[in-house]
Amino acid sequence: MTSPSDHIVVVDDDADIRMSLATYLRKHGFRVSVAANGEELNQILSTARVDLLVLDIMLPGDDGLSICKRVQETRQLPIVFLTALTEDIDRIVGLELGADDYVTKPFNPRELLARIKSVIRRSRMLPSKRLQTKGVVRFDRWQFDISRKEILGPDGVAVRLSSGEHLVLVSLIEHARTTLSRDQLLDLTKGREAQLFDRSIDNVVSRLRRKIEVDPTKPEIIQTQWGDGYVFMADLEVAS
Image (cartoon, rainbow, N blue to C red; front, top):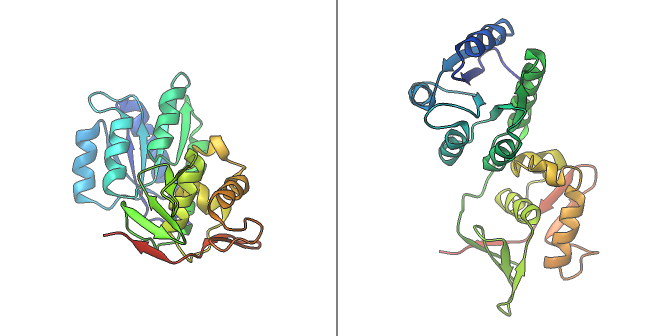
């Protein structure tokens, strides 16, 4: 649910787009700041709480992709990209870097407003509990380096994971013993890379189970909460 106190920053080097979009969003109850480039955005981020960025990909100096990467390295901030129709590759890279959604130019302000509200609503539904680790964790009989797309068995043999399997496993581990819905898993994986497995979270979990469970038909590590989603139930040990 959005709130009148939600603060959005519109980052676009086109002054007409910047100001018209700011006016439109203010009419719909948001607080809005504007920035023409990454430097101006940094000044805003250093002095104010921000709830969402509307970020143009094509910017002078640091482009939107560079800004997105830098922001997501330091904070969990929802981002909606503005992209041109010809920027398919940049759009995909942006989503992989952590953006939450995108709108192509020219865009309908009503569509952008709907996407902004949806992203804010989804971000507030995500569980706050999170295991903070970027290193190696052990569970059951497996050793998993979070940064690598493979897990090591007790025999030292590596089992390769696809990108989707890796993203889902990391999300489940970071929220161990918390039930995650399919939508939450998509958001946590920023899986809008979602276009790669948007409707196949169940298939990704099934493949993971075949790789890590003793008996995939009776899973003990990744369990199903019927009607709710999935939960990682194995004991975790974070390697020092």
